[in-house]
Length: 350
Ligand code: NAD
Ligand code: 13P
Image 1 (cartoon, rainbow, N blue to C red):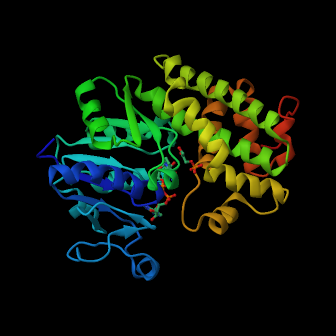
Image 2 (spheres, protein in one colour):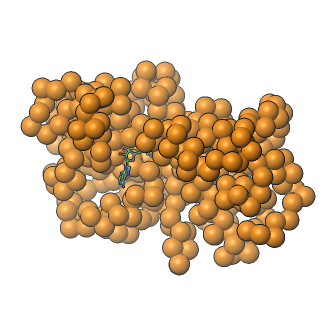
Image 3 (tube, protein in one colour):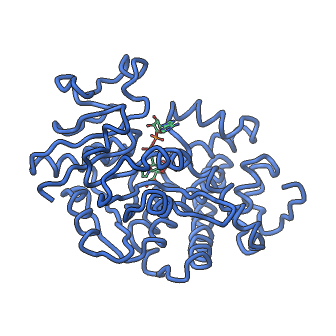
């Protein structure tokens, strides 16, 4: 670990907080880490946020209002950011990962270890592909995942939370990631169920859209709890159908029920879906995302589409009424009120 060099790929809300967590540990070890920034160091961003950039290390080390560690260097040059890294932390919205992986081929050390904090999946013609598999397959490297009940703004101000590292085989590597992220206010546990952990983080975003719709319709707490319970059941069923190795116990880790609860109570997916339902679906999710999130990205709507493609291709639509209804509402085939009528509805148009 002492000779490790960490590069964080992504500098959004969670990326910056992940950098803060990592830096509080790496600073003790005395090495400099890099963070690849897509746009936050552009002149437009720099008008409103201080940002430490390569060769400009005297600038205030704050990004998106989050004070990073003293030893993080923000770097807009992806090749330069990764070239010496021995540990790569991927934390961008999932829709950009395929392009980023293509750019990284041949640019990283062959024995680099990776971890994905990204909640989402890709669907290819051959079937669904988790983001950790995309990274492993395209770059030929081992990749763990870290998921959990982790609303970034709360961790930024050091409120206690937990997270789960998912790994495939190598417990020693997983424990190295646990060590890198753990702080007194951020407790991390490793479990040997990479698919289960990653699917929990991915699928709860669809349920959070449903929970937001319930809030927008002012249906109350019992209805929201019912939606969360049904959502959790669909998350487990879908995960086990895709990967028979997925463990029930994973759903009781931070990545499972805890992340589902926090995202349905206070996440961005919930917030945007609430606004969507409040004005009866008149403004699209894309429009609301740019109006309400100021450059941050929504994952639940894209994930609902990706999961719908899998359900449709495999003839599983009827087994997942909540996931299906969230998709149909998000593309305007059904009104927001259909979220509480989903057992009866049979959509013809989607
Ligand atoms: P974000 O939504 O705050 O920001 C979006 C980021 O995408 C910005 O850094 C922007 O510069 C970048 N971007 C925009 N266009 C791009 C492009 N074409 N290529 C590459 N990057 C581009 O990001 P975030 O909240 O850090 O989310 C990253 C991942 O972390 C997501 O999978 C999310 O689900 C997950 N996550 C987020 C939180 C949270 O509370 N924010 C918590 C846990 C997990
Ligand atoms: P949102 O993207 O809905 O804010 O969820 C963040 C998250 O994943 C919390 O764990």
